[in-house]
Amino acid sequence: MRNWIFDIETYCNIFCIGLKHKNERHTFECSWRKNEISQMLSFFDSVKNDIFTGFNSLSFDYPVLHYIIQNQGVDVCDIYKKADSIIQTDWNDRFSHIVWKPFIKQQDLLLIHHFDNVSRLTSLKTLEFNMRSHNIEDLPYPPGSVLNFDQFDKLIEYMWVDITETEKFYHHTKKQIQIRKELSEKYDHDFTNYNDTKIGKEYLLMQLEKKMVGFNRKNQTIRDSICLGDVILLYVKFEQPEFRRIHNWIADQTITETKNALKDVNCTINDFTFEFGTGGIHGAIDPCIVESDDEYIIYSVDVKSYYPNLSIVNRFHPEHIGEEFCDVYKDVYELRQQYAKGTAENAMLKLALNGTYGDSNSKYSPFFDSFFTMSITINGQLLLCMLVEQLIKIPNSRMLMINTDGLEIKIPRKYINHLKDVCSWWEGVTGLILEHDSYEKLFVRDVNNYIGVYPDGKLKRKGTYCYGSDLGWHQNHSSQIVQIAAEAALVRGEDITDIISRHSDIYDFMLRAKVPRSSKLVTVDYEGNEEQIQNNTRYYISVFGVDLVKLMPPTPQQLAKDADAPERRFMLNKGWKASVCNNMDDYDDAAVEYEYYIREAHKIVDPILKGGRI
Image (cartoon, rainbow, N blue to C red):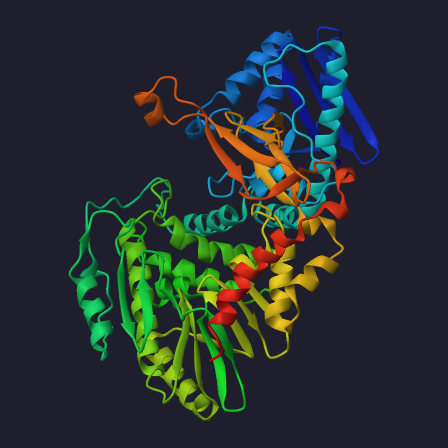
């Protein structure tokens, strides 16, 4: 089976498609100057056993192709109307055009990476920025335009640039593709376009169907209200007055929805504040540097596969599925232990375990039962507090951080064995397993943003301190020199100004700006002249640059008050000038305004340094 990378472009008077396999390339056009539909269909017939890889192809490109294949007498106007109907479809109906049984096998990189999720929306242009492509080019003409013949050729050139970038991202996705191929062959189920979480959930559903007579994916448990006292395990008990207060308050609550069920619920013990929430507990000391030394150690404790094992051990299950759910869940957990990390099976089984909890609170899920969700999240927090309550009895101990399934605490080294005894007691009470680690140093801004240094020198980066391979493809990869310099300053004591001014990788200085089609991105020079630039723009902060401004339509509320309300204007990096650099040939090393990056690095370093050392 050969793999073809492809893309299409559609305008009022031209449709074109490009397909590439290694060094073999094909372009087909249907326009006012030529009609190559029959040649395209003959090509598809000759490669019907191959696979076609695109970006957002299942939601857009292939439905257009499917329409052409089914209606072989269509002209360019018909094709454009079909494409436009897809583009104009409401976001909530975005799956309505997907062809679930395509004539030619599809592999959609957008779906594999779950970029169709509202919190992970990522365009090919964003990926070009994150992949550090030499040139980032937006669609050359507004959608719906009538193009001339010269513009036809430019559009086709642009299409081939997109195909090249899609192929580049395909190579970044090869590991995920291979995992899906292996799983599809082993379990006789097509996982090709499943995102990671969907793979895990589908595997679990397949096992439930296999082992439970009468299991029905359409069933759910809908509840009008939940008494939280009913979800709390009977052995949850506290000595600390503040933990007892939280325990009693939660037990008295009856909720009608899970969102914000534990909003603003917190307690403070020994100057450490514990924040409770629907998803889990969290808390951290004020910004500072924490160090292990000959007398003290930073100790880290995490619960192994916490939420899945809470369900397995305590027989928590969605009511409509029944208690057998826990047996299947346990089988999946034990099966995962048999596969080494990095294997396709290990990855899938991990996702089968972890994805179920989050899905249990989704009204679209076959696992939906909010009582099951709250049983896990409420007990998960309270049980962790039972562990904390005993650990803070250790003389001269100090809580550092707590977050969902684990905690960090600083204790005298002479009490390590006592800490381990406490952990063993907790494991005996809960039936859960704790994993232990330690840090030489922690550079803490807050619970979600910190750098940890392990005894072997390896680093753990979280939140704003992540860069490079720590960042997901859907995340913003802008100005990574800031994180690089911050890490050098905190971990190695290097000078921020020196690090930034000597840094040679120009991509680490680049920032990304993007606006939707309904908005505009413009530059404003020193005389106030505005020039519209492409909606996805790469730039850097420069000494001799322009202002970057987003122009967005007025809100409905503004229009209700004034039908002629002006556009909203938002300046990017206010107070600093920018140089557009969509083509890296435009980069001018001498123009970089290092002071901007130096100040940004100080923003994430200075609060920690000012907090001192403990």
